[in-house]
Length: 535
Image (cartoon, rainbow, N blue to C red; front, side, top):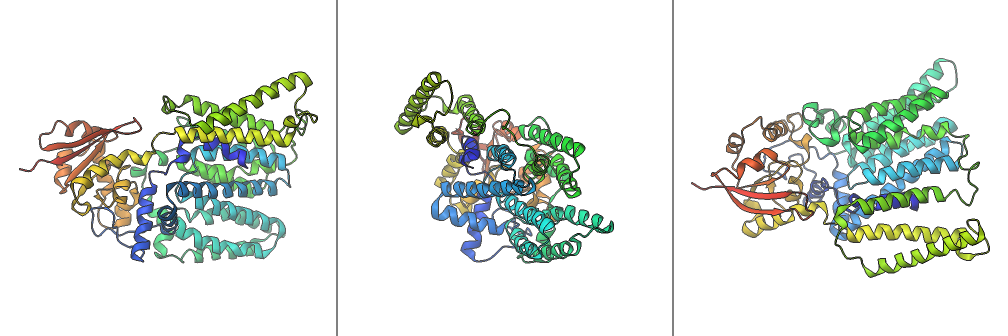
């Protein structure tokens, strides 16, 4: 399990707080400090917007960790939940493959490596993925063992889910549906199946969904918040394509599943579950995580009689395969990232790296002398010392990348926040920001035009104004920036290179004064603060 996560730990994204986390932390702080769960939006400049804080419990948990232990603790917590999720995935594969550890470990290693590289972030999805995995495990266990008490945990999971991440709560019912369908089909054929208990479990999941501060509104949040005309402009909610690495991975695993379902007689529930979630994966890149974690375990069932490595490698050699893949990925990540240039390496890393190189030379020398790997006569070449040293080397690679990592993403807005708060009180500022930058300013007490919560600014949810469509019209140039700014009494405007049209035009407009500009600390953008010229 440590080796599974070693590769992901070398990716810089893994050491950073996700940009969307800032509005989550801001929400958690509000709940903790006021002791209330809001029904009206409080962080932006808009007044009277109806609000459903669909991830309020996640926000409170994140805020308590961040406020008491800092950002590193919050990142570590996300890794811990991810670790537990992958263990649950491994147990699920082990269960459906009738205890085939080799197949389960290999599939888990591949999925874990992908997950840690691309999807393990400080967002509520870490909870929802774990809960859905647990639900599938319990359903599969019940389907085979017919013990009704196994289903008793599902309403409890539902109550947790609706408060941790309401936007995905309906997935609990969607995941249950394939098991109900197969049970109904078999029952129709006069085969004894657990049909009625599954229906009752579904009723328990549904009723437990009402145990939240917003009632029915939270339960249908997914259906009221999704608008194709809005979400198609957001990368993670756009259709999955081979233009992105996540899309390539999605299509590879989709092809594997199609082949296995064509070749073998897999259970009907697996067919509906895998291909149903595959459809979700086609709809949005963000759903690729759900597909990988919830729809790929049937591959372990299909390969339950397969015993990899036995014909090619003996027991001592087989663990070297994932280790080799991890090291290749780490070295590539280290050498291909330009942000590491001209950065000093700390002495502990130099020392351990030098020690590891000495070990490698000894390994090669004794291999040539003995003519074989893992000599039992030479202590350093026995399995346990070798595994310990190899794992240490992987940790060193991760530590090296951690020490040499550039400034975290959220800090690219820090100079702008410091400038604004140096010159003004937070409560006196009414700030225009783009979609991605608003959350960090709001976390620092500054009222903004909007942040990266598109559903909150949709009329279907706030019942007052279609702010998000207005923003996209402005951002795409369909709405004149002078007309747009005239609608609101902004005291300041924060523009980045992401805001292409206003970024270029405002610097030429004599009605706006440039107060502050700077290059992003990570070298990947530019920020400017303007203020209207007083007439």
